[in-house]
Structures are given as structure tokens and as C-alpha cells.
Image 1 (cartoon, rainbow, N blue to C red):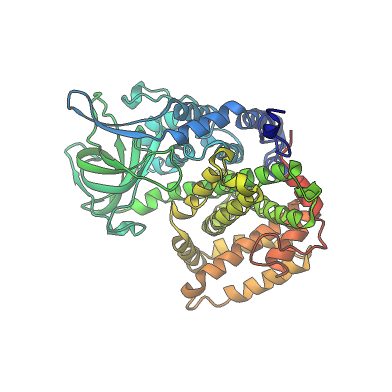
Image 2 (cartoon, rainbow, N blue to C red; image 1 turned 30 degrees about the vertical axis):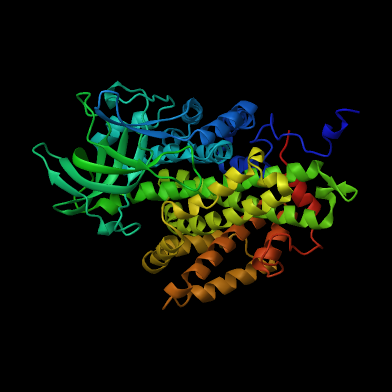
Length: 547
């Protein structure tokens, strides 16, 4: 009898040793839908391999170790020389190496690359979100560098490489490289046109000397950075290499690392430029247009990252409630908890479906489809606004499904909670996205046409969606004084797009629940308020992480 009080019963087993890809029905369906038939077999096998890695105990341990042992700034070596290096736990390097090897920076080099990478990025976020920042920046730097064919020829093969080379040395000696980005400054924040960092031309054409600061510089251990600075011709984009061609370190003074709410494994820094060598990317005075494709790509990654966090949170909640019993029955079988889980599940599936649709549009736009490019112009900021804002309430509610266990670090849920607001803030917070949507609506009629054509493909399939489309058209008919209602308008744009996608592609029970609660007004402000007449058991079963 001595040990009987420590017998463990009525606890869910760890969610480990499973395939995160094949166990996610919404994700697998989206990949199959958006890839050409000749690409599917290879892509599905590749993603299933990554999915098994994501669900492994080893990867989960790496994620925990990287967050428990955050990066440390080392400004000087033992002799007093300035080195400005960031030391990471070995788990960070293992995570980053695995992400690079999995092709999460290689979307630009193969057919269907954005869809394949998007699925991988969404899964890898569920393992550990912090290392996804340098993966995202590196991936997104490619279209910006293409403004200068010589720079693209030099750097693109290294940025799209599937070899992780952590050593700081000249790019010509590396098999793979990572990129960061520095845009914001203390006095400007999102208003990058208020930047004061100066760029003085040097004798060699296209080279400059930078002086100034960056309030947020992502991934300071990277091999290069795209930054904005003020040249004689105006705000301009520059490439700042960490190590110069002769092997000497560029002037890159890391003042401190940010002490962040979440994203603890990843280093975000304040840096100073003081005679820092840089190479111009694009034309002088065209800094924002040059870097805008990079920003658009990272915004898609914010949507993917939030979708990944939601999926992991919902998977954990459904898994837990499938085992845990209370009041004589499994939690997942009890009507009220089933309602909560189903509500969370449709939000997660809507986010995943929209995120993969954006990735498919990226692939099509890269192949020259101008209508898909126009759709991205409107859909990306709308999706970035809405999906990232839905992430935090979904994750918090999912943690509550675990009860007190969900408030304990060992469950992994607190890390998801701390991470959940990040994508809404980074790469332009909510108001920035809403105003960007207004600009697209006002200046780019092709973007509006492409959006309406996309949502119109589902017309006639659900009366609630049809009514929402009509209401949206009324709002779009008069954009005078729209700024004050921009958030509401962007929310409706995102919801109608999600509804259209789910009506076309999701099982009827998922689309029915989404349209009832999100478009038809038959749902409350909190999760778990779906109409009880819906087939909620099937919705929850679809969200259950597979073996």
C-alpha cells in the first residue's frame, strides 16, 4: 500500500511518436488539392517524413531545450576584441539545421515549392516557432535580391541551399547562408519612412557606408541582412554582409538582445552601424518597393505560423480530451466540451486552408499568373490581419481544455500561449495590415476583381455565405471614410474568403459549422457557442491528431 497514492490514472499519454502531416486531414487535403498530380507522390512522401520528425520525442526535446536555454550575447572575446556574436544552445542549431535540410528556405527552386514549403513550415512551427524566424527571413530575401541580378546570382544559391552552415565566414566559402532583416528604428517603428540611418556612397559603384541604428534586427547571427537606410536619393534597400569578402568582420555592433514575451529561443537584437559596409539593392530612393516582396513573403509566413500554432494547440486539446474522463465520460464525448473543441477545430481548419491557398497563389504568381498575383495583394494583408489575431484566443482556449495541466510548463501549452500574439505584431501589426488592404482596394482594381472572383466560385452553395458576399459588396461600394471601419471591413474580407474556401473544399460538417457561426451570426463571442444541431462529433473527429 505504500505507493498507492502515487498511482497515475485518468491522464492522457504524451502526444508523441506520430506523423504530424498525415494526422492533419485539413493540411494533407490542401497539399493534394494545390499540387499538380505529377508532384504529389514525391511531395506527400517528403512531407510525411518531416511530419514524423515533427512528432518525434527528439524534436520535442529540442524545442524545449532551445526555449529553456535562450541565446546569450557575447560582445567581446576573452582578449577584449569586439566580436558581437550570439551563442545558442546546441538544440537551436539542430532545429535550424533540420529546417534548412527540409527545404524550408528552398521554395523558389522547385515546382510547387511554395505549397510544399508552406506545409513544412506550418508543421515545423509546431515543434518550435523561434527557429522559423531565420528560416522565414532567408526564404523571403530571395525576391528582394532579384532586384539586382548580380546579387541574386551570388546569394540565391546559398539562401535556397538545404545545407546549414553556422560558421561566420565569407559567403563565397559557404554552402548555405541565412538572412535577417532590419527595417524599424526607435523613432519610427512601422513608419519606415521616418528612418534616420544614413548611407554614404563609396568609390566603388553600388557600395555605401552606413551609420545609424536598428531597433529590431531579426536573427543577428545570420550571414547577411536586408536593411533600409537613407541614401542621397532617398530611402534605399541595402545588403549588409556579416563578414566581408576578405574575411574581416563587418561593423555590426549588437547593443543588446530583446527580452521578449515569447519566441525565447530566437535572438532579436538592437544593432548599430558605424561605418558599416553595404551593397545597394535596387535603385536609390526605391527602398520600400524593393523590399516589399520580402515583406509580403514574411506576412504569408505569419499566417502559416499562426495556423501552425493553432493546429498544435487544437491537436493537444483534442488528444487530451479524448483520454481524460470527468463525471463518468470522456471529455470529448460530453456535449459542452465537444462544442468547444469543434469551435476551435473549425477556426484551425479555416486558418490552414487559407494559408495553403496563399501558398498556391505564390506558386501561380511565380509562374506568371497576374490574377493570382493580384489576389495576393489583397488576400495577404487581410489574412495576416485576421488569422494572426485569432491565434491567441484559440491557443488560450485550447490550454483551458487541459485544465490546470494546461497552465503548467511541462504541458507545452504555456509556450504556445506566449508565442501566440507574435505573428500579429511582427511584419506590421493589425492597423498596418488594415490600411494596406484599404490601399489595395483604392488603387488596385485588379486585386478587388481577383478577390471577388475567388469568393464567387462558391456562390450558391450556402445561403449564409451568399448573404455575407452581398453584405461585403455593399460595404465595398462606398469606401469614403473607410479608415475608421477598416478593421471591420478587413475582418469580413477574411471571413468571406475562408467561408468560400471551406464551402468548396472542407467536409460539409466543417463548412456548415463555419458558415453558421462566422457568417450566419449563429455563434457567440466565446468558443463553444456553436449551434448544438450541427454535426460537432464529426468536426472533432476530423481534428483528432492521427497516429
